[in-house]
Length: 304
Image (cartoon, rainbow, N blue to C red; front, top):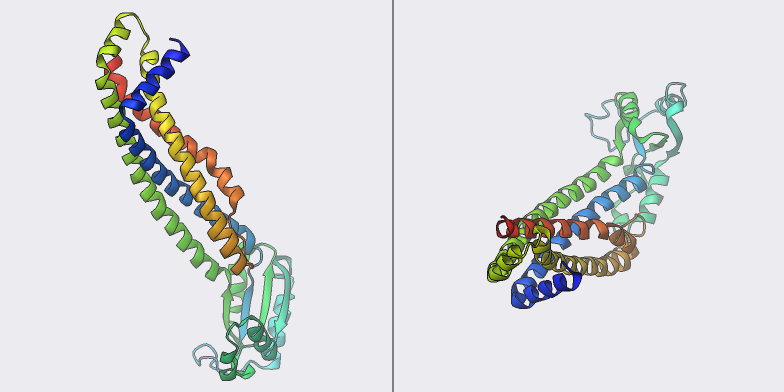
């Protein structure tokens, strides 16, 4: 079958079912937009892990006058207890796992609070003596966190051992849940797009059943009969996918790059390059679903 004839049949089907084709484009656009957002959320999770996990520190907070009694029954950490914690950090058992550590006094902690706080009015209610002295530890391998926690949690003079990755894990869990939710909506929308494509192509095939019957009588192959219908669905899916990529790219550039990245410059965000990186996957998903839906919907019309 000649290419010109196949394309002619495809355009004939599009003109005859234009409103339904537009519906396929719109549903595909929405569903692939959700697919794109879900993929970008997963990339953001990966970016945050790569960026923050190596930077996350472990804080060994020492007992102060304001520490809860259940954590520090003996009261404020003595100079000897502070020295013992430092000696443990320098021990042969822990040194191979520690990249660096430093001691933060109460005044250092207060100065850091002032430097990081956006609302300096809160400083008038806070005194350096209310903060804990602490050792801040960077690990060579962040997965060895439990080793530090177990080593110092029960050591005299230590109020608490806190892993900063705990805060990061909460954010990552939220992003993962959001990604799953968006992915679930995307799956439902893709299923709807497949059903709509199947129905539209089936109606198109039914309206041209006489032409199909004639083509079968003159010996046309099943593929040559199905191909115009498959191309209809494929074209609609690619147009919808292209609109989805363009919309997500615009949203990423405007909301993420221009706003979030500017206001939250301390972390790494996905960008326009990531959108273009997932574009082949998104278009491939749309094309695959449209092709399968069109092939299934026309199968009964090409059976001998």
